[in-house]
Length: 293
Image (tube, rainbow, N blue to C red; front, side, top):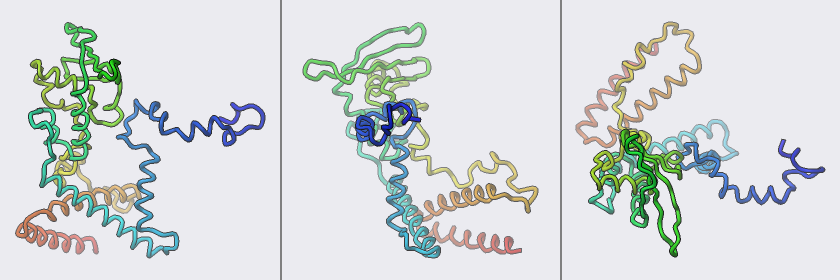
């Protein structure tokens, strides 16, 4: 135990130095997470964000009925915000500050607005950086560069980027992509440098730096597309032995499918909306009839 490391009867809570470290943990704990993908959010932040949203709808004095009524309101509010966000992403394109940048043009087409703006923020900083060759092992397929910027005649934010020219792979020792899933300014500086000198694979973002979770296509998958082929026959051979895990999985799959369809229908024109709403009502009626047997 941690308390065993302290002499006498002194406890961790009463140790001034430990309390000081705890108070400023936000300044040093990230150093131990640089090799872990966190998407920029710590576990405590995710929990605090969830709790703050729940508090808007739920109160300790609510009974069970009131709890479910208010919780349903919470889910409806989140779905509404998701629909608005999807609609905004489909109907408008992000503003590109440097329109001639092929990297930013590519990023604007594939990433959500939020992620694009984060990449653009990094890209706009590369003008302040200088680049130099560290080692050229072109015969082995590897080149390393150093990027840095000058402040008061001194180098700052100095980073080394290793490039595998055969696979268009870059590794920066700041590890921003590995932790946040977003390209850092150091890698973008090298990519633009190589692209300007004829490396076409660096004129756009390589596929292995495009995380599906950040793309516009992440929520545009066709409803039911490929599900049957991947999972095969979804019927259960022992209908009366369906476990709780199977029920939960079916509920999640069904909910996800109808949520995606609802998002698309809500943004469709009236003729298409009325046509498919009529078809859905017919399907629901037949399904309810079959399930009631």
